[in-house]
Image (tube, rainbow, N blue to C red; front, side, top):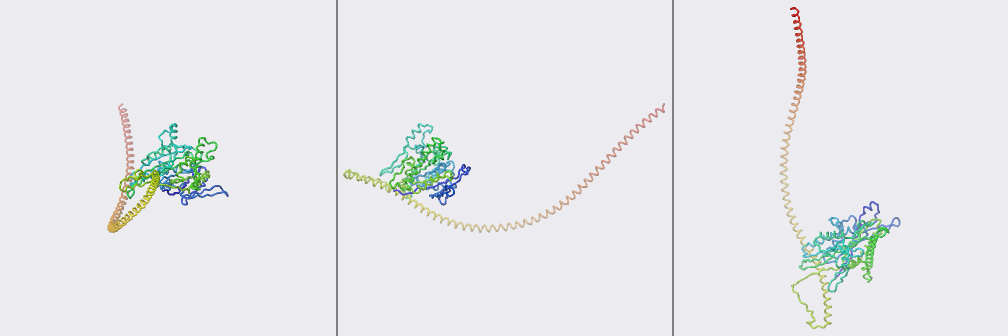
Length: 557
């Protein structure tokens, strides 16, 4: 049984780029997270027009990647694990942050986009003990110039012949199903589905695919995505319910990173490369078709029996289940605050506003298996045994098909009811456990409070005893300090006297030394005089002796 669900539409306003800041570009788009509104100002003076748009959620340059994921994809993960098919796609002009929002920096836990965060969240939830079996596969599809490409195939992308052969094998087909079997819907035949065991495997696949994706430099963006990419996680799980039954679910999560729209004037006019111009035309053509589909669905064209142009492009054909189909859908519209992109921003916001009113008839792919006695009962509907005629048998077959279809619908409804009942049961059990836990905590708190009171009284007594002990020690210390001060004063007085006496002795010693020096000088002078006298006496003696000798000689003669 299908249920109606509206498309969730959110808008993310990127910050001004460095080039825009350097060029002093005027920001004309503002957003309010609290009011969930985006305002665009176009024109100046008397021709100024102010347009305000309201959405389910609005993110600004201050919003983190985690906040975007928590508000857009985190609730969707529960639906996927419940058996629903869900789609999230980013739409907007080139250079407004679509790839940053969807993929981000896969090597940074803070700057990862919604795709790697979704992978981490899926495996975190599957790690719960209630899941007894699970299988997750991933695929990465590229639509480039209206041609399908498999970004995860094992073909060498430098081998153009093998790559073209692989692309020719990819076909966009529809499996509507039968009265007794639910079809796969619209899917790509021969698209590679890689099994993944952990979030790191998903990151490796994303890194491999990003190297193969068509990216080019344009006037608006140096690293512009030139193709639409669809990353799909298929989650099969078996979960044991609280009543002992087992629920089997198959859910899909499609995450679409659309190529950015770009007008001819912004792209560079006549000077643009022909191959790049062909890319731009194909991208804009598919996005215009997407806009027409959204506009017609908003106007109720599907209910009126009007033709919805899903088949006019491969993108809208692939997103058919997401737009008015059976998927739960979230649209992330990205816009630039720059006045240079005001027309593209208005167009993006108008498309996003149109998508707000679109309703999808979502349907879960889940089944609850109930085994009462384990006995398989044979069917009694046998035309040979009851002798019914051919017409009765044909009618019986039609009734059987109807009953089988009803049984499938009943099983699906039972699955949803079981999910709801289990959720309520888990909430009641959690509430009861919380009450018991709070009661235990209150008792423990009361006992802890009494113990703390006793401990506090004991600590107070010990503190008073310590205080008295410290007072006594302080008094003893005061007396010891007084003694020490007295001794220090006496010591200082003794040192002063000794210093004075030492200085007097030093002065006397200096005077004695000075006197000794004078005496030595005098003695030295006396010694010199004595020596001179002796020398003179010796000279006189020699002179006298010579005179006597001379006299003796004369006398003798």
